[in-house]
Length: 292
Ligand SMILES: [Zn+2]
Image (tube, rainbow, N blue to C red):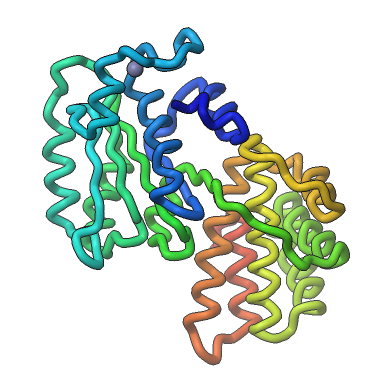
């Protein structure tokens, strides 16, 4: 039951959801340990009694069936060996297309979604992009950096990972927050300004990767803060992050996070990358303006 997770503010988020998104990506420290929480969330979507009266759903047949993994409204896909095969996604789609006999929502869970390969991810993408009424997807991973970016950008990312104490310097945090704010506020006019101010501090590829990692943590914490997912540890650094970036919409933060991860991976993968050109493209993508 979600109520068992009193310490986890994700519960508040889930309970306050007015409308469910069609696809969620949960990032957790340990998939099996966190699975009961995610299953409880699936129950919320499927079971009509669940939490509607703030009572636990002890005698509900649907919830029992979900616990026994024999509920027709819930399908769970797991990797077969090292990957999730295309056939598994296709058979999931076929099952999902059959009407349930009870008229309740359908939920599919994909465990270890980082194990989707390109072809199984492509099959899934169409499914996520053209969602049918009453069908909801929950993807779970222990590392969202391993998720194909096409998938990542189409899911509502909920990170329940413990970020742990970090060795951030206040100065660096403020610098990077400012960098993000300028991008968000000035859009294309930001290009020359942001680029020089960023490259003044981070010249080399390794420095930029480090800065991107820190920026990723900042955005991550801010998204958690906005979703009220968990209490942010009391520290000066967290206070700074909590107090800033409030003008940026949470959906934009998710978009920034997605692009940041994509560009960071590009930077890591490509040897001898042209840093100037890379930063141009990064800022153009982040500020989302069309190149003529
Ligand atoms: Zn129930």
